[in-house]
Picture 1 (cartoon, helix red, strand yellow):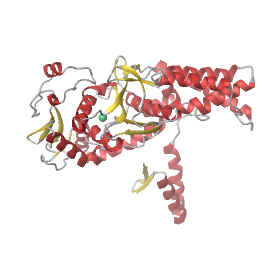
Picture 2 (cartoon, helix red, strand yellow):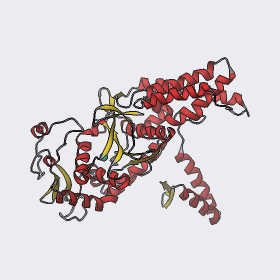
Picture 3 (spheres, helix red, strand yellow):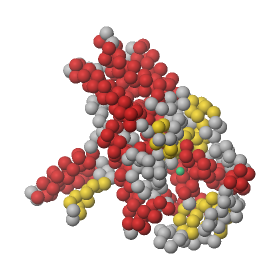
Length: 457
Ligand SMILES: [Zn+2]
């Protein structure tokens, strides 16, 4: 398989550090607000990339963090006069709901910054000791001039960075391109005790620490949106390689931005659609179709017309598949592996092995759906149906199940909460506790509050 490595600017053969195993770190959301459709692109892309690696026989360890301490979270918490962790918790729950609605599977690990503060402090202490960082009135900064290949990932030259940067008011760094590893606490800010006084981690250091703690000092792929290449990923690479003296991630993969009328879709510009709204309007499969219809590295323009077209295409596809499935009755939908099937699987893999070319893989799925609808021979219909339902659909996360509209987990849990209340009213505590316990086993917590029972993951 070949992937484009931002570090070298080339399409390279994927050769994992440990044969058969691919370790991936993806930068996750800062949880201070609802996630919009543009934010979902890296999670959808790299979850699906993981599915494809698994389909190809690799074991994958995927890690995606939650940034649960940050200026934006603190501002929101102060506005609402609540603890910043309460804000983070609220939007992490929302993130899970959105992810499920979009068919994004959880990663293997979802570390949170505030759970790694001790390791962050230790990391920074080591950088200071090795001469790559310095303390300045309670702040700690990374000394960019101490790391030779700074700028390699983003293709920037240190001279240009120095010329272009300014020291902002309140910053206590020696050189404008240096960046904060640790920030001294300001008034009304959450803080942790550290060797440099009360403070909190800077943004970049958390990803160096969490990726290393979970995946090791060197791992295979670091991924994220292309807006993170500079400065976030450049800084992560500098911190990690400065500390360990060995390559950090072997490959860097970046997805293009989702644009809205030519600009980047962003909350600060106010030009966005929330995931909840988008799923309600178009459904999960149409959104995934829309995203996969463009190569992951290209920008994608949000367009109601294109999403509407995607919805029409997946509705027609689902209709054809469901009609065919019903026409089968009790017959087994598939009986044998033919050379035609092997040929089509090879074609599917050839597309995705070529830098994860989802537009071509998607076109092949629709070619198969046309076979189900129009092939003159019944066996060919069966084979094409099998390929969509059991092979290709599950990889791209579309046409996976009959009626693959988004699943209303809220509604389902509500039914169980109502049943439990009924049992409690009847003083059948054995049954009501059983419902609570079995939900707990699935990771769903019930909380009895004066306003009724609430639930969360
Ligand atoms: Zn990150």
